[in-house]
Image 1 (cartoon, rainbow, N blue to C red):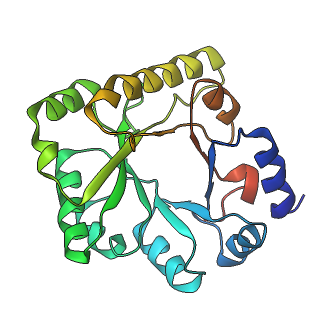
Image 2: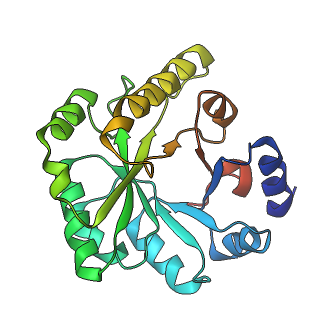
Length: 219
């Protein structure tokens, strides 16, 4: 099945208010061009070097999102054009994004990545640490970032009861934090190729889908 067909098939399963992020990491420009021709405009990448190279080669109306772990020394490279940074997992990173956004004369949209699973390999804020940071009021000093919501990942397992519990916890964190922000805090990013229907059922407004669109990764 073509990339075009896969995108239309996935879109048919998504409510109108759920954003499809096509995860194009490790896939070539040609594949992204095919998805672009099918009307897809939002793409997710996880490595800064790959992201900046693709940005240079592809149409400028693409909304690029950073979905992978982001090091502070790499923020400057993407600050001029990035549409959304989903993977904000520390105060230090948030402050760095704020500085680089100000330098570019931009306000950069960000999601707070939360860690709810027992898997050490996954990044994200420990929920208590995030609560403490937000309670400190330090975030109000940041003028060049806009916190748009929360991102999280479920446990890598075939046990859908565990996955559902993770998604429900991420959704509950989003609801808990809503009173601290304005109405632009409206994104709940969770769900990937294997589990996105369940994520949507649990309230996700943004799904990150790669292999179901592009096939297995080409490392």
